[in-house]
Amino acid sequence: MKKLILLYLLAWCMYVPANSQNLISEVTGKGQKIVLIPGLASSGEVWKETVSGLSKNYECHVLTLPGFAGNAPINLENGFMEPVQNMIKTYIQDLKSPVLLMGHSLGGFLSLKLASEIPDQIQKVIIIDSYPFYSAALNPNATVESMKPMANQLKNNMIAMSSEQFQSQQSMGKATMTSSQDRIPTLMDWSNESDRKTIAQAIYELMVSDARAELEEVKCPILVLGAWYAGKDYGMTAESVSKNFQNQYKLAENVQIEMAPTAYHFIMWDNPEWMMEQINNLLQ
Image (cartoon, rainbow, N blue to C red; front, side, top):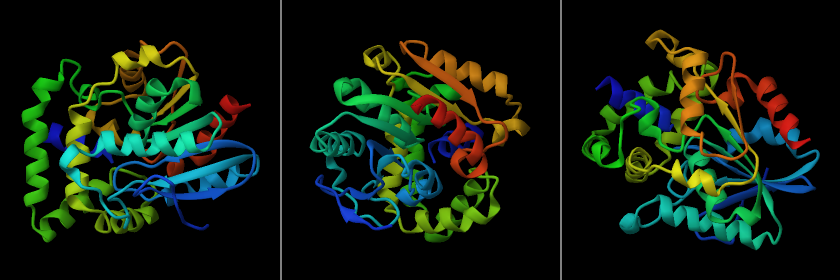
């Protein structure tokens, strides 16, 4: 049960309709284009402070994914990940020029998939606390097949929860997502405005998707910013988590891994100055 909870926790202006169905896009700034993808049940507003700095020199395209934070869900008959990945691919192709790609959590996983699928359209990738195989973050021996029963159980349990049970679970989980306590009500609001079936399906797919081998196709620079501080009471250290990241990204040709000093999962909120320093070093 502890592993189930930890796996679940790992997974966590002006709006204009994007060209791709069910994406919401907010565009600010001028310059080279950066596409920013938020994580599970998050609004694009999670990037607000990040974009405030970047939009001075870059054109920032901030997405909100379908089913999350009030955005309408898609039909999940064909799953969540592949249809959304195709939407973002179309969005990037419509921009008519190579882009920088930044993703947090689920958005980071999608960023890796896109960088391997359309490498000629992605110049650099910035990954905020995300793995190519989430399940292996806690169990190095995990395989896609071995994780399916647990992932399916977690998905079904989440869908079957009463509203009260779901609220209680979300409340406990959000406290481990950020050390900035004033942000927790915002996370709760986004979660409550999200489609629960979409959340459950996205978690399931993250747990049974292994993109490590696909990293060989990614030739552009990858900056990975990892977080460990929320797990310090479980025996995690910056060194142990960094080694985990290194193992998962070892097939990437050009990767740099940096560990946030005291951030929980939402590094952009907990260590914002440190994060912007790492991003600017890469972009410049």
